[in-house]
Length: 483
Image (cartoon, rainbow, N blue to C red; front, side):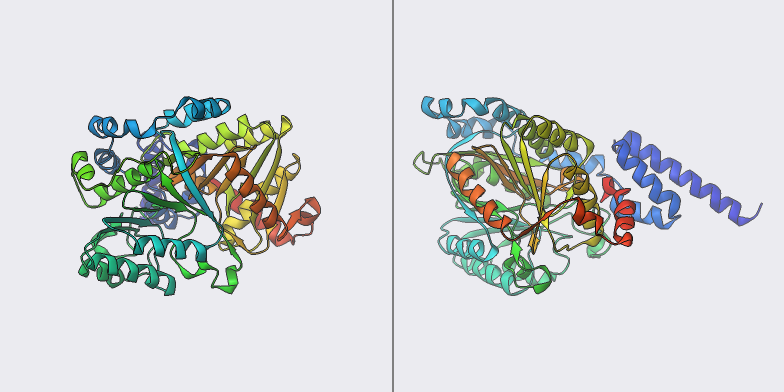
């Protein structure tokens, strides 16, 4: 027997053991297993390396550590439970949303009443407001971003953080290792030298930035909490293109929220969960209350109620996706969706089909300018199918990065989660589900304004596509479960 026979045998055995691992240890879905086996079969050895980098699941040890450092102890819950009490008038106002609230509550998302919420529709307005809040910070600034670049926008925010750290404000910063590949370590060390603290989520092996076996699992959150009273989250990262400064993906349309009220508490908790993990921090909950990180919110902030929902690969439940499905199947009149990437699984598609069959009007808006062509081809292939069902598809003339869901007249979701398998299964994400007729109406008007800058895509639009584009759509769709 020659050496090629043993190479072939070893190749078969490796694929077999990887399949066993996917089924019994990583518990991947059947669609993901089939896609990965296709990669492993048609890309010998190269497919194995791709799987090691992009496909292998979180180890049992990492999952256990993520849960160990979370603030879910009885002491913490007992101290904060009084923060979320609703009076009878507010409870009556929310009676029609009772089952949606219960669904999200069972996924660990407490209902947070009495919030004032400002919605930002572009990066510049959001960053200006953020810089103002940073300047007014008195005690703590906790900031976490998927992308925090060493460019003009990043320098503006970083300089503001350094200034507050030198003034004695406790500044904590978490950045994602993959999202911040382009930012040199010295950029973050400036904050440490000024007295701030920095943590890297899933750092690479031996600081070799391109050698990271967890690069498939990204902390996609964008969270800022200042003095435990002001919170930010949404789609806008700290980078120039998110400010609309790059022609290739311009105009850049995004959505972010600023919250004051009890809704800041779960954002603070999410940040501290990640902080405790990246820094191996075992600070007891009592200490956080002494540091005034969880001040009791006032009922005078506003009348919006929110639930902050998070999900990630450390959970067997896809909390954000399943809450979205609940919202879609409960819809009575209309659903408006904005997302840069649309690669849903069968459960999500079924929810849309049920809603449209029930007489609900559905509109989906995606960018007309792609940033990743392979993902865009898959997005278009799914949208083409939905047009046949009666769903209206709009292509925004620019890059649409907003991740929003508007349901009927009183529910609005704004967060970090795209409508694709990566965000639902692989990324650490968060979204804010807002119960407010006023904010719902405000965002509907913004959606209508966006439609003025859109192309309405119909079957004629897709028929005019070149044969190569149609071919690539079909090919890349085979890998939809792992994109």
